[in-house]
Length: 459
Ligand SMILES: Cc1cc2nc3c(=O)[nH]c(=O)nc-3n(C[C@H](O)[C@H](O)[C@H](O)COP(=O)(O)OP(=O)(O)OC[C@H]3O[C@@H](n4cnc5c(N)ncnc54)[C@H](O)[C@@H]3O)c2cc1C
Image (cartoon, rainbow, N blue to C red):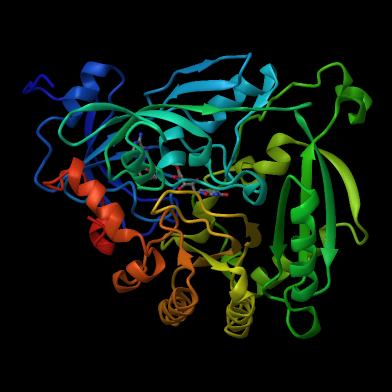
């Protein structure tokens, strides 16, 4: 790589956080848009190291480097779709929002989408994201056929499951620590229309929710359960389960028949900077959960939904993370194997006993893990809770949950983490040493580092 002294513009110093808005740290941010600028951004890294950043939708500190350099790739966008095969090559800063605007009118969809379309392709691979179809299709990395990776030594490597497989799988789920992903090719999925045929149903308690989700594994392409963790007694664990698949054109309501592949996600509405205090009140959290449950149909109901309505409902409100106030919030997401379903149920009960202060609790089944040593999903159950920061008992409670999860062979999702204790990492990710060896082979001096990697001793 040519070494030059000047750095790309725009360059700025910025205080960065993840989506949870906890742990802000300052870094020099470089935003390359050309190959020459990317070359220069990777040159002469500061002693505190550097890391890539996408749209900052990881909840904790994965895309931050305190006192170092953050390479913002959101200007690094381009999409090239082969409409015969669905092979889609895109630059790593391309968002799922942009990808869907290209893919859907051409009768394709991303193989995996998270709960927001505002994540980049690089962020999707680095976190090996999962969606409502993990039980059927696995995580994002499993659909990537090749990537171009810039490693810390400045090399530009094309890697795939066949070519440099160890580095490929260490990069999938590798939280940006093997290098900067420049571009990737993945296989998009053909769709029958741009609408989803959705079945919404209520369950009365956790046992019913678990049984129904297991049943839906066999039949539904997409499934998820929203759980009312504020409910107690016989109603504990009651849920609203939604499952879905892309609708056939002849199932569409008349007004959409003429435009079966139309896609218009619209613009998010912004929330006020200062949220009304009632939003943060525990009673209002209970009321919100109750209202959400009651909003769902009493009897199973089929409906046709839009892509944003089914996959990305939170995107309808921009910056909704501000609703938790200035201290921010934590999203705690674990996965436990099927054999530990009772442990998961116990965690949910303990959470409810301590006040159940989660606005949004999501339960979902995962299918088998892929080959990536740091990938989060493994076959079993994943539970996600959103909790405002500030409750003095919260850190101890979550530490206890982490221990219970690690004991049964489960793990915490690094893309959501902002607080885990480092000593649990190796138990949760038993292939950590193997991953660290691959990483060290491409970055022996530890030039690529993030606040997350330092906090957890990953690098
Ligand atoms: C509302 C909401 C819903 C979500 N739902 C889900 C979900 O359903 N499933 C799920 O799996 N996740 C979910 N997430 C988490 C999100 O998908 C991941 O955190 C994703 O990594 C964010 O992508 P990003 O572009 O914002 O990356 P950032 O948050 O900016 O970075 C995340 C990681 O990717 C690395 N990275 C980014 N770009 C590159 C690159 N070009 N090269 C190398 N490394 C790079 C960063 O270094 C960092 O380690 C959700 C997040 C939000 C806010």
